Image 1 (cartoon, rainbow, N blue to C red):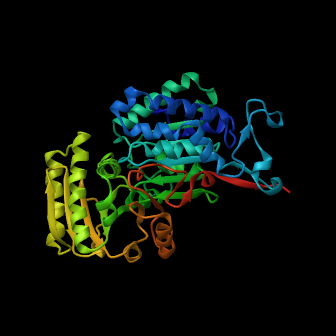
Image 2 (image 1 turned 90 degrees about the vertical axis):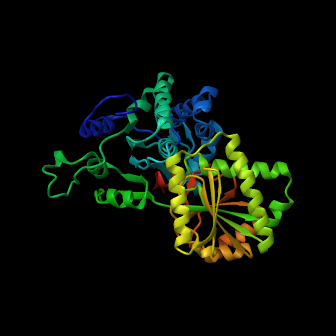
Image 3 (image 1 turned 135 degrees about the vertical axis):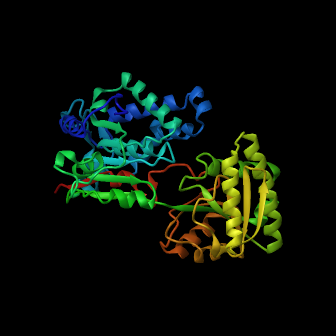
Length: 438
C-alpha cells in the first residue's frame, strides 16, 4: 500500500474495505477539495525546484481547471446541500441532460495500471476518475521514479486536512507484475490468483497505460461481463514547422519555440507518448535546410540553458540508433550537437521512425505542403505539435486525416499538457455513466 498509508495488505482485504466505503457523487466537493490542496502543495517552490514537471500537474489540479474538466460533462456539478443529502452531495439534475432526462453517476470501482516511464500520468487519470465519484485502485510500478515518491508524500500529507472519505475510497498500491491469472491452469484456487487478476475481476472499468505488450498482458485477465477496458498503448508523436515562418520569426520567438520543444522532448527523456520524435519541415528545400540548421542551434542552446545532459551510455545508444537508420537506407545524413542532441535527416517523409531512438534524437524530413502530412500519418500517431500554421490550415489537415491518426494538434511547448480529452477519449465521460430518468 502506497496511499493512504504505507504498509502491506491483501488484495481481498483491500476490496472489502473499498466495498464498505461510503459512496461518492460526480463532482464530489470533498474529493475536489483534496485535489485542490494536493495541487497547491505541488506548486510550492521547493517542490518545483526538485521536480519541475510537477508544476504542470499542480496547475491541472487548480480548482478552476478541475471545474473546467468536470463541467464539460453534463451533470458533473454537485451540491452538498441539494436533496437534503448533507455531506454526501447530489448532482444538479438540470445539468444532467435535456429537461433532466439523464442523471450522471460514477462508474463504480476503477482499476488503473500506471506506466513506469512517466511518473505523473497516474495522477491525471486517477484525479479525473475520483472527481467523477469513483472508488479507485491505482497500480503504481515499483520502478516509478522520485517524482512519483514526492507526489505520494504530498498526497499522504494532504490527508490531514481532507475529509476521511478520501482515504476510505482511494488506494494506490505496488506489487510484483508476474502473477497467474484467475483462469490459469496453474493458478490454483481463486485465492491464489494474483492482484491484477483479482482487481480486474472486481472492477467496473480498467484503465491501462503502457506499451502494447503491457496492454496485451493485462488483457489476459478477464473482466466482469459488465466491465470494460480503456487502454492507452504505444503511441508516437511529431512536430511540424513552417520553414519560412521560422526564418522570419524574431530571435525571441525562435528562442521560445526551441525552449518549448526542449520541454516537450526532454522532461521524460523523450519517452512520453506525446514527445516528438520526428520534425517535419514545410517549405522549399533551401528554406527547410536553413531553418533546420538554425533550429538545431537554438535547441542545443535551450537544452544547455536548462542544464539537461545525456550520460555516456545514452550517448552511445543514440549513435547506434542514428547510424542504424543510415545503414538501413532511410537516412542520408546524421548530425550530432554534443551528446544531448542528434539529428537524423531522412530520405523520405514516409521513413519517419515510430520507435524511441534515445533521449534527444530527432528525425527530420521535408514536406512541400502541410496537406502532404496526411499521407504519412498512421493510427499509432498521437500528438502533432506545430509552429507557423493557422487554425484553418490545421483543421484542414485534421479533416484530411479522416480519423486515420493524430488525436491532438497543439502548439510546440504544449505536448505534455494534459487535458480531459486524451487520445481522442473524453475521460470524465468514460469515468461515469448515465441513468435515464423519465
